[in-house]
Amino acid sequence: MKAHGEREYLAVIGGEEYGMDRLEEARLSQELFTTPSVGGTACAQLTMTFRPGEAPPRMGRVQAYARDAGQTAWTPLGIFWIDRRTEREGRLEIECYDVMLAGEAEWQPEQTLVFPMSMEAAARAIAAAMGTELDQRCAFHAGYTVDYPANGYTMRQVLGYIGAAHGGNWFATAEGKLLLAPLYGSAPPETHYLIDEDGQAITFGGVRILI
Image (cartoon, rainbow, N blue to C red; front, side, top):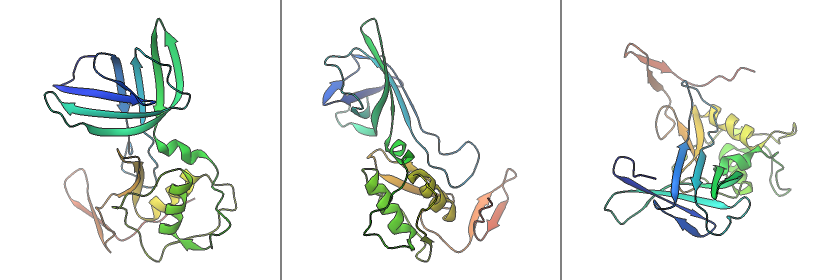
């Protein structure tokens, strides 16, 4: 695999390092939304083709890094888990997803939790159930609450409702933590601004969810 734009890449799979001499192809995609919207839970996908040493473990952990050519420090690109694998002529292709895929399971809250609970507390409980935690940059409205999920909602669905209530979307950071990214910035102000196609400010004071 040739360095793209003077950059080098590294993958650590099951504790074994795969550098530019063993990587043949890698594709990383993470789409927050295709059109401006809220309530999304983006799941990043990593597809790699490489010459394996020891066979990577099933559902193994994959850490991806990049750096400018000539530099020594690696920048993390994300943490993923192997979902599918295909072997061809001594090469292995793996399809991996980040921690958001763990949110596809039904949310079954621990018995110690009390409902209704704040959306922040619910998000933290869901992150823990997914095996991760919230990014410290997440900001929540103190008065927003969540009722007990009695209808078999998945953890991603509940995160989506929380994201929509805050006018934002969820994704996993390069460190594998869940981050709520609002469309209007880093903290929830009373009035929010977007720009239309003509460069004019769009003002709105909240989010209404229609079912």
